[in-house]
Length: 359
Image 1 (cartoon, rainbow, N blue to C red):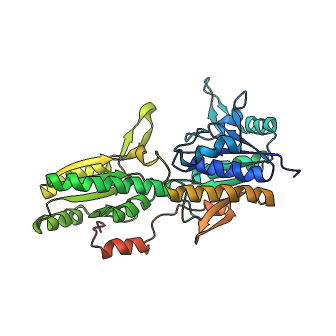
Image 2: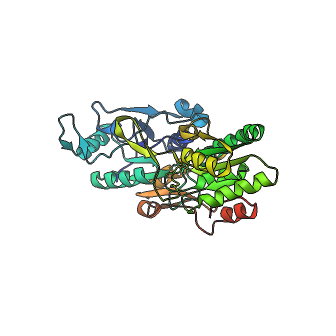
Image 3: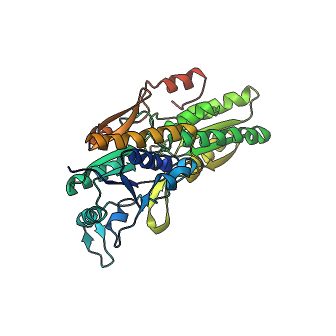
């Protein structure tokens, strides 16, 4: 590999708080090496379009990006570049288009910020076209295997916790069971963290099968003790008591997780006699100003990603382990989904606090 003069950075998958802070970290650190940074628009699509959609990022341009939510580069979370359906119905592999875009921009390497799915696609794509690659993990679900903390998770937990704080007041005012449905496609980290921090009486996560009668009894016990209200937090991936996944059909026929909160509300209303209400946070968890911790993690990841390129260490993902940034091979970083471990300290904490986990 020759002398590095210019690198690219892109965001892929769902947006979350802290992405702009990571981009800023990449640009600031690259400037210290005398490199240019091209911000690629709309994930990998920016390199496949004609003309190529990218912009030169300078320290002056990104200086104020630290506190901005979302991603100013744009992102995509649909499909993958290897099999793209064209308007005439035929399938097209955009690998060559991607390679052409990299050549046009004269990129020596690319920093890709994404979740496990995006990182896998980027790894396969970069390997195929021969472009050096370094990954940065982001996901509000915090389920990337090799890192203790992903960009966006802390902010999502803060938002869910604030929602629980607010729901407590209206629950107590009306003697209601308030149910908060939060994101968590494969893992219950958001529900578990926010549930403890927000004082929920019931926490339901996909890793722990629950029984409706156990949840109902916990609420009835509170009623018998003169506590007529309860607050429940549930991850969107939790199934019904019969084991069925609850989904909703979106625009264009797309099917996504959602609706478990409403299911629980109906069942608990019948079994406890309590008035129930449901709040679905949805994309509120992805938006807004990133928390201080997400800004710190994102900045550290951005700096280390550039340092990896400087050292010639490619096809790696930066991770947060024991309060340090450590890089691991991409395939190791995404080897499995990091779900809530049965022996997780926070599960023990929840049980110790008397929180019902439904089992």
